[in-house]
Image 1 (tube, rainbow, N blue to C red):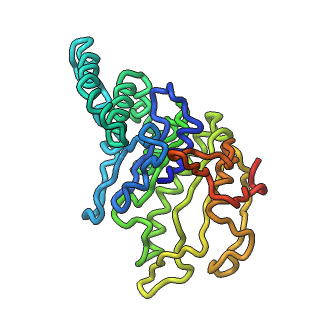
Image 2 (image 1 turned 180 degrees about the vertical axis):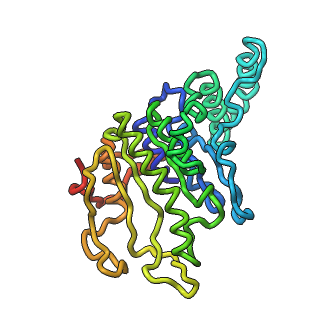
Image 3 (image 1 turned 180 degrees about the horizontal axis):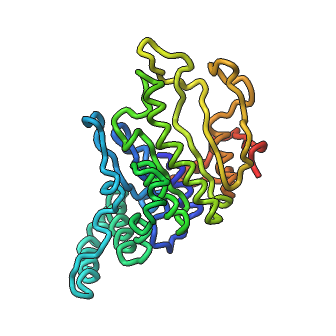
Amino acid sequence: AYPTIGSLISKEKGDPESSLPRFVSIAPYRFFNPAAFAPGILGPMHAPLIVGDTLGFGNPGGRTDYTDALKVKDLEAPPHPEGVVDSRVSLLRDLEKDFATARPDTPGKSHQAAYERAVKLMKSSARKAFNLDEEKAAVRDAYGRNLFGQGCLLARRLVERGVPFVEVNYGGINNNAFGWDTHGNNNAACKELCGPLDTGWAMLMKDLKERGLLDSTLIVWMGEFGRTPKLNGGNGRDHYPNAWSAVLAGGGVRGGQAYGDTGKDGVEVTKNPVNVPDFLATIMKAMGINPEGENMSGARPIKFVDRGFKPIQAILD
């Protein structure tokens, strides 16, 4: 399977010696397709650390306690005498050795990689990156006291410690069911949704800039498709793949411009259309990754980006 862009950047930009994961996904909504967050052919070492996994689809109210959700469970070693944890980890490795040798496939490797990464993080002071209580109350307030806002704050803490790819998902306020899937009552729903979005996103950019990190951090804000330009009978907007927008900001791109045009009614792209390969290639170029690169799946080469791509030079630095 093709890797996610997070897993690809984990491989291309990550430090294998880092105690922190190379790809962190904050509050992903995985109910419909858990495999969408898998590392594919790149293997378990490039799978994301999931933080703040959301509740199941249709949960009444869908509210998530963001304070609890953004804590990485069992991050502190148990309060045993010195050496006990190490001896238990060593025993686990010995017990699994024969099984793993006889079954050198993905499930076994995923299990081993998860344990090795967890132990490495537990032993490192880098785990403090996940402790939002270290931040001043005024900073936490500025990001917004909700799952998305605090997720953006966590993203800043991870970026400044060298994590190459952090994904912050916003499926709705505290990831309530449906979120942006506004088939009904679109205008009121979007007004409510945009408050936490604007606050968290703006503060993230401001905070990164003040810390001298914005020029080296590419921010990508996007969804997977647009919404119909006209309201339906329920004052909602339905799925619409013909035209929609994405935002790139920070490192590697020239801001302050709109590229492309969807005309006066937003029905179709009328100027400078951008397809998926073009968009991915632009992100790769902005991050200093050659979009012509490839990974191997057995003896089969898998390109980073489908052939025929054209990076958008007009927005690249």
